[in-house]
Image (cartoon, rainbow over all chains, first blue to last red; front, top):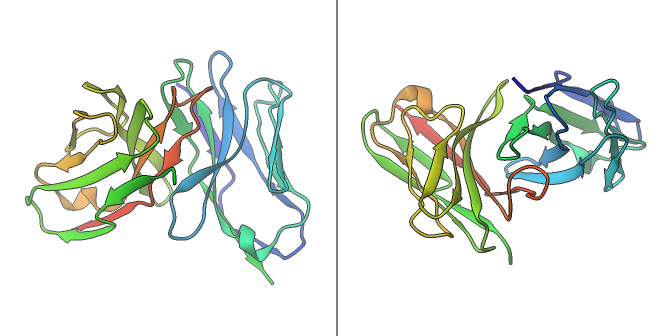
Length: 112
Length: 115
């Protein structure tokens, strides 16, 4: 079945460092891909998404490109801030589009 | 303000005592869903509903019930809670299907401890 694999955390970086959180997937058909973010004590919220191959999603300085050839959707940010500390979830829509398939989440800690 | 609300936010209960966690959305969304979040396991879907009176099982439905009598409400019922249902629960809704059209909007979560 469809699945999403994320790099294990926690990922600890200093402020202004470059961020990459890896996400790879297996899926039949042509899923949409998502990154959701969960700030401490809150529910998840959509960060960015891409619906077809080579699409780039971007929001709040974060970017991710839908790479069908490598089945990846890595999250990047050029200069992280303390306020980016959160748990980041990669997800894909299954072929029916009824459900999202979730990665395990990656906790990001940014130190001043 | 568009939002998904859940109540209660925190709950401590004992094994076997029936409980209900309420979920309500004010965005007129058709699709609603319940997830549980456990360390290292990410989010796992419990049940979902595509519209009023239409519900279906997710990945981990055992021990849970849901109903969708009104579009805005989607309560989660634990008839006889057990300690392995201790978890963080999220309700979510979206305008369309969860994939291409439906960005999911999440509630703030309900932290449940079953003793």
